[in-house]
Length: 139
Image (tube, rainbow, N blue to C red; front, top):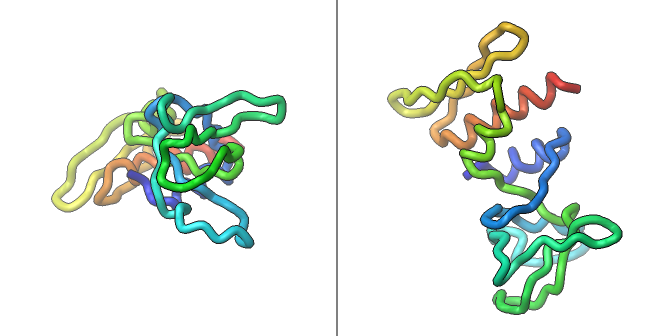
């Protein structure tokens, strides 16, 4: 799983999340709201947390089976933690290879006929860093 820091950077760089069953996220509430649950990882699931379309956007509705009382949060109050397969899919045609090294993984992408490599012990983090590079080049 990618770090919260990388997830926030991807979001702030323009990565758009359309919540789907099985997606993981953390809360990202204003500083004046003290909530221990910000460190918890939640999963979108029709039984406990579902994405609901509202006139103002998408809300993540907590259906009363969670340990603490929270009705819903807006998508802006959540940080998506994309899975390795989702990150790879977002790289689309730029993805060239995932290489296992002795103590890390290397993701290779091709952008504008140049290969770029990103290494990390967690393959999801390497994919995330490659996606960040791709997003930054598209601006």
